[in-house]
Length: 390
Image (tube, rainbow, N blue to C red; front, side, top):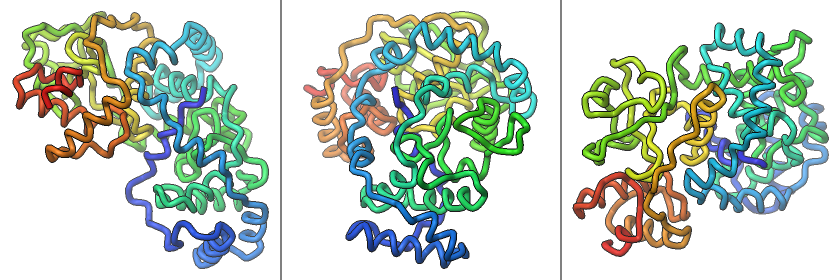
């Protein structure tokens, strides 16, 4: 199953915006992109070859607008995605590439479970890498006016890869949003972080697990991964906890959480001086986790809360953590009800990041603020009671 769809949103914030306007005739847009490529110093011959057969892809646009899977809650999503087969394949790949993972730990400080989880969720360990022509997808999304400035830099990065001999505009395929290879990296990220992990003289993210895994590790390191530190850990929380202190927008030291009665469900909590947030993806009656600084790096890879939490939890499972305690969370809202809630929250002055029916970080913060105002348990989990009260 393809799940890399939101990782395109993690393009580096400092990327310069292109000058070519979106929309209009795709042919005219392509001509303008070619002119910009020439202005960037690329040769006429390379530009002509690179853009020779580019086409607009309606299938890419349909995929971009069909992201309903991220409207599922954490329990439903994680149970759908984390199968016994994926866990067993992860264990086999961990053993098969043991020396690669050991080298990654030494060089980049990234734990093997983290990369195995990305490898599994993005492409089922390389089995399902996407069948979209990468250049067509990038050009289509650059031409589309929904968020073109996220994609245009990737077109010119792909051109640079083409000039290096690492990208075939006619044959390179991947995800609909332009990610390539086993761990689904965008062209800019490949330029910055591509590693020849198997020593064959090429960076082959589609066919070489060592190349893909080491490149992904370097990317995570560059995004701020802290070597040797945890990322997510299941915890048990007392019912007397001040729920308004929970959520990614609140942090305390591990020792402070421990003093408030938070305990590890298995093993020990992280170092007492580490900052951490208590994460309740489905409220105070559902699963509970301690999210460490490395957890925030996940959002540089993918912006979806439910995807990030699932990927981080799956990484702990691959390293021996037990199945989480699902608890008995209060029933959540349907996508339609979530949109109603977001509309009401916006009317009250909250920034929820758009009316999309998805319980993202901004909606959670707004929910928690309104729960606190109304005297409800402020655990950031929206319920029908909250919707009715608003």
